[in-house]
Length: 70
Image (tube, rainbow, N blue to C red; front, side):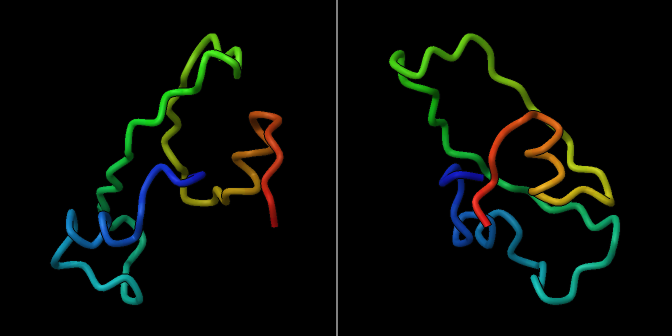
């Protein structure tokens, strides 16, 4: 998420969840820090995307033609 959140913030928002013991369909809240693009980045729009069960960060990046560092 390119530094838009930190694991500590996710833990604070989801105090009852055990990260290593999540079931498919478990609702997890990911707080996202507001980091709008700088004017120099020439961004004209921002989007949101709901992750689907088979999605990976790599597949989502490919969908939007964005490089994902591996």
